[in-house]
Length: 347
Image 1 (cartoon, rainbow, N blue to C red):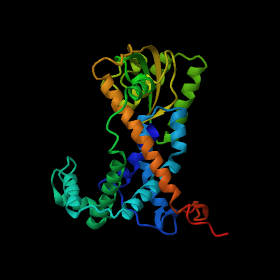
Image 2: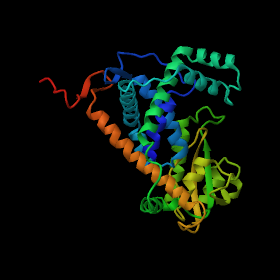
Image 3: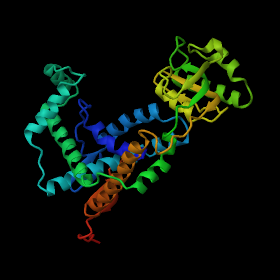
Image 4: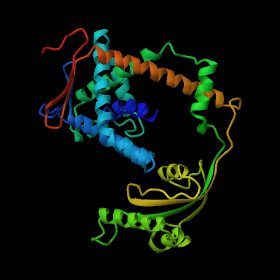
């Protein structure tokens, strides 16, 4: 499910307010979909935004490495999907009314970021090298894609009892009372007053500390010796942390609850520091039954999401089948090409 939501969010990331405007470089093609160009700079924009999301929300380990490894391809696939949807929108004669685009832009201007200050918004556009017309064109695209997606799933409004029960079994770990861990942390900052201590040096330093702990070194003593966070003197002891606690950063808390009792984390990279976590004890919350308040409603929503995801997947597959899609490598060389099924390839 994470990958589906990730791909869905990429369009919003690329068309978000005041994203860095990058000129369409026709010498850096990533793909051409039904005659519409996708450049490598557009792909890179999507990658940068989503990479930050993964680093903050996915614990270090095999799952994060897998997502980062496929990020470039996922971003390109999402942009190809965008062009497929926009082509279909145009075929159907779709058009977003100008007043809706103006309303959308005004919502952005009135958001917390700009506080209704139109001049501040225009200045930000100017700073990023984007004209108001270009920004409206981009918002037009996102509204068009959202409209087409909602159109595909508008008939899916309810789930059957069986589908709801399947969702309960599939996502059963979401339906627990609050879980708790007894946690220790070890933090090494990325930047120190020592000019020789580069980020690479600090990463290597904490990696060596982890190796020593794996070989038998006591985490508590290593934290007292090397850690530079607020609980270093206590051997990194954070006490008992609940899933709903606000005492710990979200990414660290997420990583902690992915660990088993007695398990040591991989090196976790944050914006300003590297971390090691050690779960000394873990108590999972009791599972909630499907009949408890709120559980069935949540399962019905999850079942609907899965149904809509399946419909969306079939729809995109049909659009791909009837599209001209060409992909290029980093040197601009054609690597794959597909034509509509009704249009035979020329030998």
